[in-house]
Length: 170
Image (cartoon, rainbow, N blue to C red; front, side):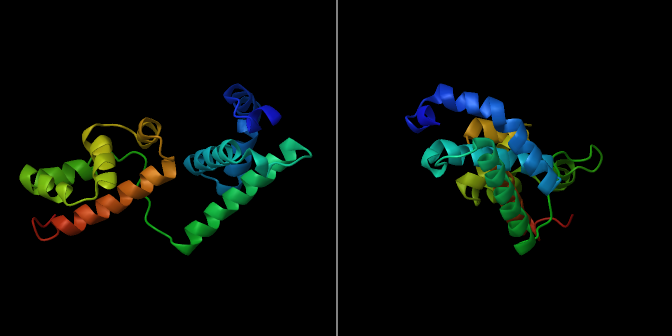
């Protein structure tokens, strides 16, 4: 940890390699959700890298498990406070959202509605729905947490739905 405190990326990678499975396992047990567990794992290690002084001393393994568990419970509390319909990672091949929406709307209406979205939402939707990039790949390319990518896409799709309501009845 002393080397991590000095900004040694190699030491951080070693800690990550040694403990990421443990952190992921704790988060997965609490959340029962693999993408959520991935987000928690990323969040825990981001916290460790950005604030290595948060670990003072003692058993590092026990400390990081406690941090992971607390972060996973934070996610559960946040979900309970604002339940939302989840967008599935992958859509069914038949009657998928893109086919239904794009088949009924003309391209100009969609372009106009997309142009009304904030750039942070529009760019992610374009990558995911028109570029064929998965949520995970978007997170990797943009450096955003997976949960942030999903939230922005979900919010953007809601705005698109509102903007396109009345243009064509689906």
